[in-house]
Image (cartoon, rainbow, N blue to C red; front, side, top):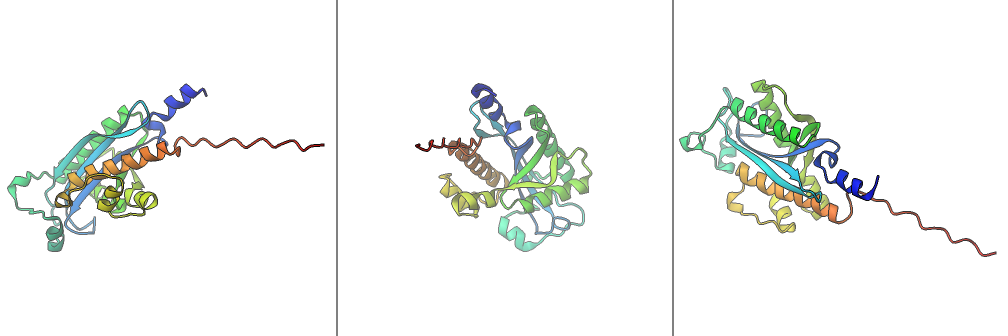
Length: 225
């Protein structure tokens, strides 16, 4: 493969993560149990890659969500995230509408990027993925684009790169502005997580970590006779 061909190959999103299409996700909930506690807010941002192989945030969607029938509502969780589930200005939609809208956006973007499947990227990703998957199961929305258990966790990646696992501290380490007053808004946290993930991927590229080019072994000096 020539240098030009090699550069073109690695500057396509479909070839960066082995065919996976990364989607940044953040949720706000009424507890920690994805099966029993309400999903109250969901935001997602897709990514795109420019002609030089750098990753950038792209499309976004954001939903305030009505608690599903029979959902548990933990008052301590509402106190933490500041959500008033009875506020009509939330303009909340059903889980069905939210998950349908999310999957439609992701499938379109995944197809445009010519990727095989999408993968959730989130800060402490197991939590967010569990709520998305539980809502998808409850609503029976078909053609879930996400890998059922694979994920990219920006808390782990930031711990590796910066020695920081808290989102605000990781953003500060990456020189990404973070307004603590807006934290725990799903959309705001998703936007910052998207910036953080793109920064880490792009910085790794600048450091020569992708594509990895192994140094050729030094020629051995012929022994003198």
